[in-house]
Length: 218
Image 1 (cartoon, rainbow, N blue to C red):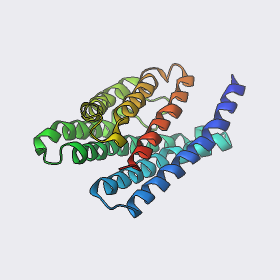
Image 2 (cartoon, one colour; image 1 turned 90 degrees about the vertical axis):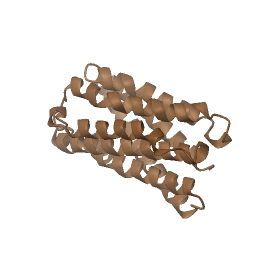
Image 3 (cartoon, helix red, strand yellow; image 1 turned 45 degrees about the vertical axis):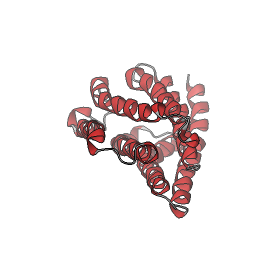
Image 4 (tube, one colour; image 1 turned 30 degrees about the vertical axis):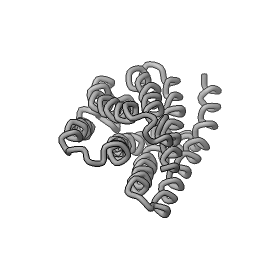
């Protein structure tokens, strides 16, 4: 058991570093070459993703390299809270990118349910009942706060799925979003019972890089 954990750690740490560097690089590149509103939004989205995830992944990398996860429990928990909020903002950026690509003249009423879900998700994340800094936070509140997040993800995925083919560069965006949530769901529900499910966060993260790479073609 311990050996498998060490092997996974040796994979996870360099993967997390590669992911953060890639997301930062893509974000800066998109902003530097931002000759359209879509690219500027995409670059900002990439940086929000990278900065937010850094708060969790950097302590995670330190925990893997030092083997002192217990001492970093608080930092990891606070990092998860920040990441949960910035990930919500990430999907708001993605929603706005979809609107610019497909429905530039859409009424704000179309976006209202999406923003309500995002606000609800953030408010649920901020509740003390989440006990972010506990070694094993309650699964129940993990489920509560992720219900509006999953609905938000469905809304964004549907926006891209309905208009698939309109912008070829975004043709697989809905699939990347759907897969990211598909990998995330088992982690939310059962990772406290089976820590190996945490490995699903690696393909989930690959889906985010896929999304960012598609944005390079806008």
